[in-house]
Amino acid sequence: MLDRRDVVKRLLIDREDLLVVPGLGAPTYDVAAAGDHPLNFYLWGAMGGAAMIGLGLALARPDRRVAVITGDGEMLMGLGSLATIGVKQPANLSIVVLDNRHYGETGMQASHTNAGIDRSPHRPRRRRRAPPAACGEWPVLHPGSGQDRRRVARLANS
Image 1: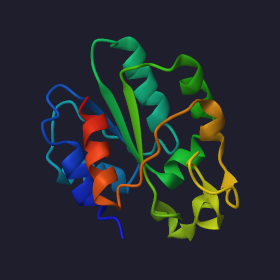
Image 2: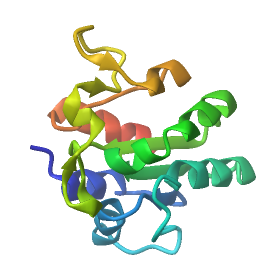
Image 3: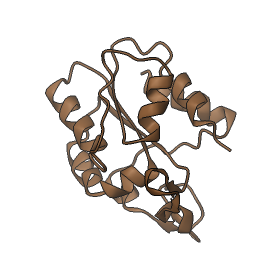
């Protein structure tokens, strides 16, 4: 099982001037636990808005790197934002989705990813593909493995 706090902490090591937008709930706590920072933009009550806020920051500040760290439930609530991000494709924006396959903030109901929706373009076809693959080719990594955990950290800090 993925240790969210450990993954987020590793992502934010040596972050320098990285602007961080954590999604509602657990991702906000994960980012805060990694160390409060004046460049963290915590969201409270903005379910589904993290990716669009990250996009706005990335477009307004093309000279700065922006990372959105959110959960699968929050990202599913803002699914339409991925189409806009796919059109704009700001090179300075990274989106990390921590998938626990549940809506953690509303009672741990199973999310769509728990029902077989797969965001990865590299998985077998027996699973249904979700819209992010149709909104642009994005690297999808599974940080439960050591190799992907290192790749996630490199991507977030590049």
